[in-house]
Image (cartoon, rainbow, N blue to C red):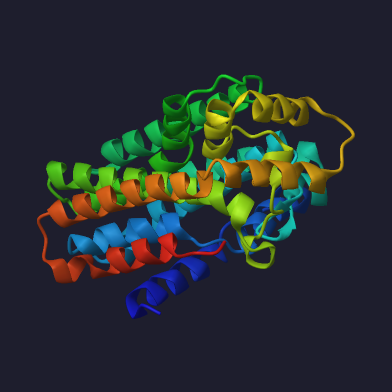
Amino acid sequence: MNQKIAQFEQLIREAIGHVLQVEQPQTLFDPVRYILSIGGKRVRPLLTLLAADLFGRDPEEALAPALAVEIFHNFSLLHDDLMDQADLRRGMPTVHRKWNANSAILSGDAMMIESYRYVSQVPSRMLPEVLRIFSDMAMDICKGQQYDMDFEQRLDVGEEEYLEMIRLKTAVLLGSALKIGAVLAEAPLVEASRLYDYGIHLGMAFQLQDDLLDVYGDPETFGKKIGGDILANKKTYLLIKALGNADASQRAVLDQWIAATGYDPQAKISFVKNLYDQLNLKRVTENLIEKYYLASLDLLTSIGVADERKKNLLWLSESLMHREK
């Protein structure tokens, strides 16, 4: 384990443990405390601290906006799970399952408001720029979520449309987390922009890997049901490629499964996974993941600080690309 990253993770965990701990009523804030307590990789706040450290700033000075990023991320997951009617998050019941839909909506709203409280704690001279980055990120995530929902009604979603959707919904959060840390460290604008782009490319690889793990991951470590995207007809990269590359007979059966109701879930997962295997889509997706990942490393290399200072981000990048969950 990387020692500095372990220190930063401990710092984040301790700070998250104090978020909204004394707020009342419990019926509003218990779901917030629950979603924040069930773990997750804490990648996004970690990126903010690592970005500040990269440019020589004390990471603790970036802790408040790092928490803002993590709180907002979990707010978006809470609402996303409700929209998707997901049962599990990080291997635990989702908030709308443990409580109800109304609690998921209102407690999520409270988290969004709390995230802006933490943003407001940055030094006043940096607040306008950090607030702009954070608000642009928040709006992009909403746009990405809307595209994701729109795609549920379509069978003609193109590859480029999908990649733009995951850029907005997932990658922008990583890029913005990094850029906020760089701004707080008063990094040159060109370097902060390169770090943002590094995060975008890493985020694209991360989400594509998530698509892959939903089909090919280990159910003991993934934290979500394997095949959940298949059962929900989510327009993942693999399904989009399958819809475009299947021959006439394969496409006809795939269309039947997509339209089917009252089916055996395992039978649907088995058919779709077998079709992905026939079309070699695991390898196709892995190649695209590698493309984005290598591009992210090129961007990190181009940043004008000593290589020794980049080693923690490199370590984190590698760990994200070799995860099983």
